[in-house]
Every structure is written in C-alpha cells, then in structure tokens.
Image 1 (cartoon, rainbow, N blue to C red):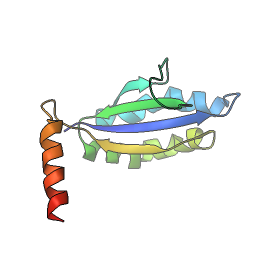
Image 2 (cartoon, rainbow, N blue to C red):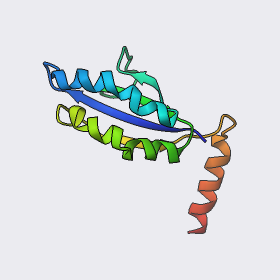
Image 3 (cartoon, helix red, strand yellow):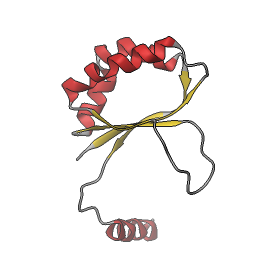
Image 4 (cartoon, rainbow, N blue to C red):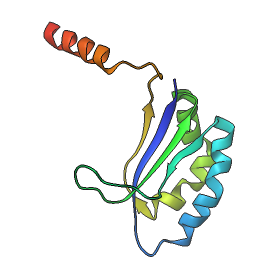
Length: 116
C-alpha cells in the first residue's frame, strides 16, 4: 500500500536561504526509500473553504519506508533548514489501493458504530 508524507507549510517571506538549501538536498534523502514528489507547491485552485499556505505531497512505496525516511539520519540532518523557517503540520499517511471502495468502507464504519 502506498504511503505519503503530506506537509501544509506556511513560508515566512522573504524565504530564507536555508529553505533553498533544504530543497536542493531533500531528493537525495528520498531516493534510498523510493520517495518522490507528487505535489511540490505550485498552482492550486481553492474550490471549498479557506486556504493559505503551500502543499507538499511525497509518495513512498509503503508506510515503513515513509517512516524510515523521516527518521533517517540524512533527513534529520536537513530537517531544521525547513522547520526553522516554515511553520505547518507534517503527516505520514497510509494510502489506499486503487480498488478502494468507499461505499464498503462506509458500511463497515456504520456497522462498527451500530455495534458500539
């Protein structure tokens, strides 16, 4: 099952040079864990609710590799370059298979709720 590192970041203008150094170095920390960018800032269109900040989404083959990347010495060495200059939550998320069925998930959740 794929896994994702998701960040909702709020850069503090002007962007500090440490952030550029972080961006230059992060791919080398992802490669050993099969991580690659799906979304990296860029244009977005808000269709519901308020939104500020930038989004980063990195895909990994599985949750174990996502966790291992985040805990790796290589990533820990550069993490402060971003964290000291941008606020915002970072999450590791387990994905779903391509044949995920939200109706079946709703039925299971409804049944569990009714049994409680």
